[in-house]
Image 1 (tube, helix red, strand yellow):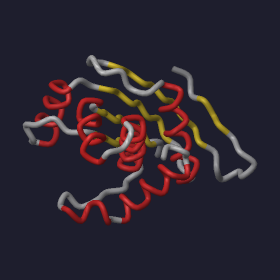
Image 2 (spheres, helix red, strand yellow; image 1 turned 90 degrees about the horizontal axis):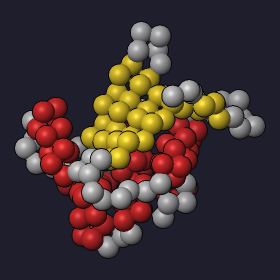
Image 3 (cartoon, one colour; image 1 turned 30 degrees about the horizontal axis):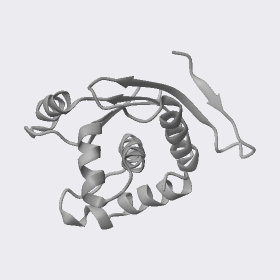
Length: 157
């Protein structure tokens, strides 16, 4: 897939994106174009470049991935992996479970689209090096606050 360069009037706000969206599982996620706009929006606001793939997985596939890479034998909502390349270019893979997103959307009483975009942003921030605690304080962490500002700023909420 060729790299798309997105330019703005601000020369520092250039985002080079090689984005691939893959869908598996039964739940229909958000359109690929919306995923791309969201990832590009995060990269622009963070003034970063990256090659990122976003994959939507079914519940059991996400559970297997979580068990294999994180040691947790349960499905999760999002997993992100970043690989800095020898040339300094950042490559990342984001895996999202629409099943887990739907459960969270019901729990928090938000639209599924909003929750899926939250996870796209969350995964992108992880690829860029952001992290958060795993306890209850995660929702007040700097990463979480950044994610929620981006969600609003990108028009997802």
